[in-house]
Amino acid sequence: MVEVVPLVDEGLGNSAYLVDLGDGRALVVDVSLDLRPVSSAARRRGLRPAFAADTHLHADFLSGARQLSVTDGAQVLASAAGHREFTHTGLRDGDEVDLGGLRLRTLSTPGHTHEHLSFLLLDDDRPVGVFTGGSLLVGAAARTDLVAPHQTEALARAQYASLRRLAELPDDLPVWPTHGAGSFCSAPPGAERTTTIGREKAANPLLRAPDEDSFVAALLASLGSFPPYFLELGELNRRGPGVLDGPPRLPGLPTERVRRMLTDGAQLVDVRTVAQFAAGHVPGSLSIPLRPAFASWLGWLAAPDRPLVIVRDQDQDPAEIAWQAAKIGYGLAGELTGGIDAWGSAGHPITTTRLVQAHQVEGPVLDIRQTTEYAAGHLPGALHLELGELLHRVDEVPAAPLVVMCGHGERAMGAASLLEQAGHRDLAVLDGGPEDWAAISGRALETGA
Image (cartoon, rainbow, N blue to C red):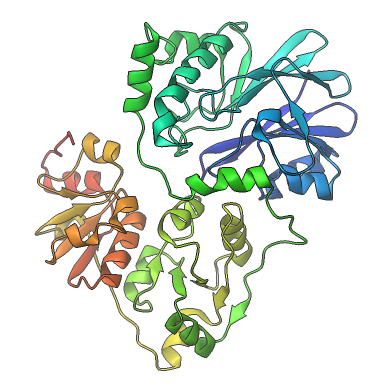
């Protein structure tokens, strides 16, 4: 039996895959530059990555395929139509690669991107499973608007044909997608990461669309917002991510040097918890609490052309911060040595942000969740502006006392920090979400956009 190990990145909502080839070698599929999970999984099984396959030019993370080719001698397998500028084996529809007993057959499945491939894994002539990348997903299909606005509909029509092609595979065939729940590349309804062809034919609303026009309308209607760095990483992956000569670092920076850097345009990114940021932070710093989704929000809110300096709690892992930034192509200038305590001890100003509980909410409320979240249930009369849009639309937010809220508090504190940078005062952040308010107040949430 072929062992296929999913390696889930909860923050990006993606899965990479490690395939045991049975002879001490492994195939890895759609692995990010943060190779720690795949390296750990391979080491535990005594495997060496011999092949690194990419289904498409990823927009949400830097591929780790080139890194594996340099450090492990892995053969990079990718679409010839992607025109990658580094050593790889360019594949076209129907090509097969001998993995040593197992074989990989390419299926052209454009839609998410022009050059998208799916990989059918074969044991002799028996299909074992199919890596569908950003084509057929669990209950969905990946978005088609990351290439160019004028190509979105044409790519959606290509996605329709690609899903129909995949649906012709055997019903019991395992489907191993890359994008899943939590990915801004897709909008799957549940938490399942893998599926089968038959399950998708029975339950995937896009596969059940009666015709191409209905499919396109449904797919385009599901497209939400996405981080701006998605528009840059595809090209970086085509040219080839820079090869790391070691783990990314987070060097310490003395207080006075950080102060000078801020004067010259650097940005402080505070990764401590919501409660810690509320209790005291450097004025003008950006709150992005360290959690699985840190990389996505760093890429959404922090400008890539400004030096980024981290403020962390001593219990937070600097390696995790540096790796999350690196996998989306962000380099960090370093961290404030001694953290917020050192800043205060040097006599520099510290400010606070009020944190309120559900029973303390009063006055205007700004809900900064995604549109689908807001529509599913929000406080009556709450204003709505997605966090990702806030950076460019702060002047639309009333300069009045506001309670900022999201689902738990992390994104809301990020929004409050952006508003504080823009000069807003008398802000509070809800420590919780709409369900907490409904439970305390006994009132129903409103629905609809």
